[in-house]
Image 1 (cartoon, rainbow, N blue to C red):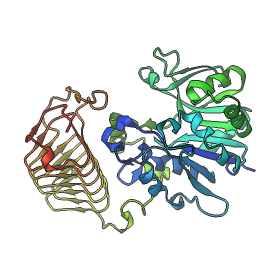
Image 2 (cartoon, rainbow, N blue to C red; image 1 turned 30 degrees about the vertical axis):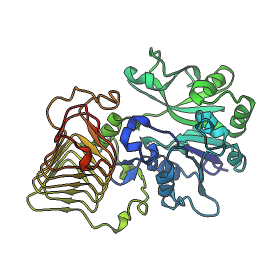
Image 3 (cartoon, rainbow, N blue to C red; image 1 turned 135 degrees about the vertical axis):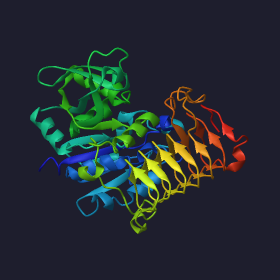
Image 4 (cartoon, one colour; image 1 turned 90 degrees about the vertical axis):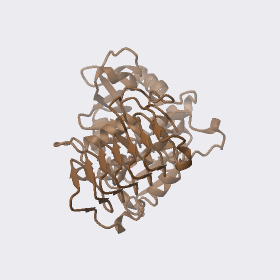
Length: 421
C-alpha cells in the first residue's frame, strides 16, 4: 500500500482560540472565514485532499455547529465514497468542562475507538487553524525513510517568536535530541508546526500506557525523544498560525502583496461553496462608475460605489457612495452606508455602518484595548457579528464592539481609542 492509502488523518479542530476575540464568540477558530471565500480549516483539509489521503477524523469541541455545517459530508474535498470519508468526532465522555479534552494527546486518546476502527500504518495529526500548503505524502515518505517513530513538521522562525512554539534541537541526521515547549530563552530557531506523523501502533501504545500524558509538546514528545526515534521534517514554505487578531490581519494582507507568498487558488485550496450562503448563486461583483478599487480582493455579490484600498471583502459586501474602506477585512454581507469610513478594521458578518460614521478614527494607534491589551494593540478595530453602528458615530483605534450591539448600545457618538462596547 502507498503512504496515501495507509495513513489515518486526525485533524484537531476543537480549540477555543480566545485571542481571536469576537471572531470566535459564535464559531470555532478553524471555522473563522479567511481570504474572502474560505475558512481557515479549508487549508488543512485541502492539503490532505491534494496529498491523496482518504480517511479523516475531525476532532471538534468548542462551538462546533458552524464547523460541522461547513464540513457537511466532506464532498467539497472529495471525502465521499466507499473508500474515503470525513468523520466529525465530538467529545464523547460527557458534558462538563472537566470532560473536555485536556490537551492534544488527550484528544486523540478519547477517540481511540475511532482510531482502532481504522487500522493504518501511520497516523497523521494536523491542526485545523493554520494557513499553509504542504505535500503531506512527502512527509510520510520521509518518516518511513528515517525509520522514525515520530516525525514532526518544523520550520525556522525568528528567535523573537520561538517562545510561542515547541522548539527542537537536532543532530546532523535531523533527529531531534532535545525539546523545549515554548522556551523563554531561545536555544534554537527550529519551531514545531503542530504537524505530526506517528507509527500507528506506537501512538496507540503511548496513549494507553500513560494517561498522564495529555499534551504532545508538553509530555509525549519529550518522553519519546529520550528513548525513541523522533525526527524533524524541514518545511520552508508559507505557514502561519492565525490564532491572534494581528496574525489573522497580516495573513489576509499577505494575499494583497505584489508577489504574494500565499495563493489559495494556485495551492488548490477548496472552499465549500454550498455552505457559504449559497455562494455559487451570488451574482458577480459590481464596481460602479466613479468608484475606485486598488490592491484589494473583492468577492462575488459585492457592490462597490465608493473607494476600497488594500482590503479583503467577502461575498455580498455593500460599499456605498462616498465611502472609504482602507486596510480592512470585511466579512459576508456587511453594509457600509453612504459617506462612511472604515480604516484598519475587521468586521464580522452582517455588520451595518450608518451614514457618515467612522470606524478607526485618528492617528494614535498606540492606546491598546483597555480590556484586551494583548489582543488589540496596533490600531485594528474589531466589530462582532451583526453590529449596527449609528449614523455619524466615530469609533477610535483598538476598539471592540461585541456581536449584536445595536444602536441603543452606543450611548455616545464618539467611542474613544481602546474602548469596548
